[in-house]
Image 1 (cartoon, one colour):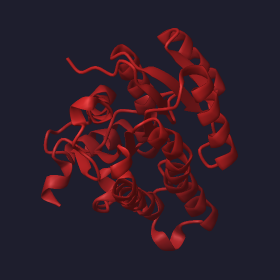
Image 2: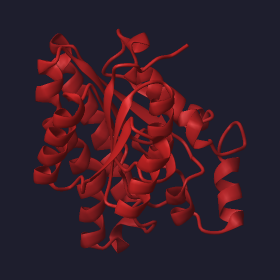
Image 3: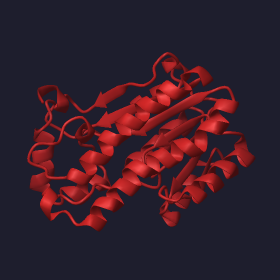
Amino acid sequence: MLSLTGKVAIVTGAAQGMGAEHARTFVELGARVAITDVRREEGTALAKELGTEAEFFELDVTDPDQWAEVVAGVADKWGPATVLVNNAGVPGPVVHTADLAIDDYLRTIAVDQHGTFFGMRAVIPGMAGAGGGSIVNIASVAGFAHVRHVPNAAYTAAKFAVRGLTRAAAMEYGDHGVRVNCVLPGPVLTPMLAQGSATEAAMKAVGNSVVMKRCAQPREVSNLVAFLASDAASFITGADHFVDGGQAAGW
């Protein structure tokens, strides 16, 4: 059975949706988990639900100073983080490029791209100093190919960048025992998907765009994230890993 016993994990955007499922899965597999999010009430409730092996840390991923505080707080409680899951993200507005407000573009880039960079920058020194670890960056199939009929330049640009950051860090820190991988989910039944596809008909259309004719459950993504975080993936780094029900196969 897959085990994360002894791992100290930081999961961003973990108060709800896919991030919360990552946190649950990690605790079930034996990890100690820092649940980080800007949603204090939901994050605190989840930490209470998961018990003594989880704790909530408030974190705005766009703030490098908050990152430093969280990394230090986790190290004080459990020791240096050996796993980072850069999950926090916003969907970005679904509008054509020429209609995209500059502030909306910059906000999406700040959370989805800069937040990933700030997280790796904050965690890698301690992780490398502890002998290594695993970073899992959550991108999207939209970071592999722009989703047809869904105008979303900001999100697409940010998720392409996450893949580039993943490769750069993997190349730079592999000899320090730090593995860095990228997970590219297709449509997942989370609040963020609902935010971008508000109607039941729209949600059904999203599911029909997938070879398997449905959206993923969050646990189906978390299972892959947990594998990449574990020692079972000890020779895997710098790679894209799709969990999209075959959505990208036909692009």
